[in-house]
Length: 274
Image (cartoon, rainbow, N blue to C red; front, side):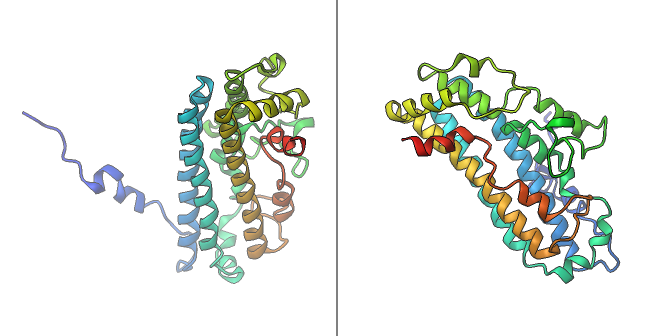
């Protein structure tokens, strides 16, 4: 006898549970708090998906699978475009509307998005506590998270394993001669632009169309992240001006400091060398 439970749209997607997760804290509650919660929860779902895709992408790159890598990079770029476009919705909320419930956020801040921090680490960001800490906050990228928490552990672990850039270097090494030093580097240390690697990337661009396509798709992803950062800065400035951020950050000033800092700098440096 088949005892398998009948699967419906609602049960498969856990719709009832999902719709219980938006719980405004303001009195009333204020009309716009639901929008604020919904968009940020959706962002967390997209961050989860980006981490899922990035893991598959690293595996594809390391086994030299060009077509799978290009497909995954294209999907990730489109997710980034979706994340950017959602800011248009958030910007329909005026400063007065946001301030009607902002005090309810207390110390809650986007700094505490462990998944976005983990995504940055997967891409290659490596600022640690102390001398390597973020200059705008004086903190390492995991220090906004609760010590000993699973979320913080995931970020710290991501900073100890090969990044997406490390996987890309291994992919490029499957296509021709490549820097042994770059391939054997300490992956827990922030990558620094390398002239030899850049020359080898230029050589691949000239001799290997598939490697060139992967390189340009990585630039697409990098540009998408920079676009997200810029739009995020302008959204915050439009909503709270130059006020301090809710998590004690410098708000717009901190976010602006993250602009124009590519995650794959070598792929940008080679533009002026062709």
